[in-house]
Amino acid sequence: MIDSDREQELREVIELFFFSYRAFTRGPDEILAKRGLGRVHHRILYFVGRQPNLSVNDLLQVLQISKQALNTPLRQLLSMELVRNEQSKTDRRVRELRLTPAGIRLEARLTGTQLLQLEDVLKDQGKKSEKSWKQIMRQLADD
Image (cartoon, rainbow, N blue to C red; front, side):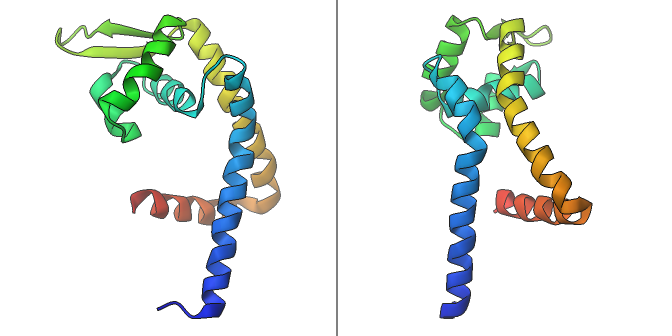
């Protein structure tokens, strides 16, 4: 059982996490909304951009979503010619994803807003604080 003082401190952390995530996603969300896209599209663009030739199955694992949840947003990105879906050169049964030049530009714009935001905040905190924050985020991600 968590004592009431500690509970209040942890609730403050939850609220800060919520509000900071909202601020962190605001820029990309605004850019995406103008194209009729949402946050899941940004996640797809981000991870396909980070790992060109990522298979659809690997993307499902990274995003931890079902094929059904991926189907519509991926089809939209394909039809907008932001992502390509091509047969693997090493295994004809596998479909690999990669960003098109337009997809690369959009992903850079979306993530660029977040890179600038993080750079601005982290430069004021110092490397020790950045390292601690990364450790906390990794631990949360691993849970």
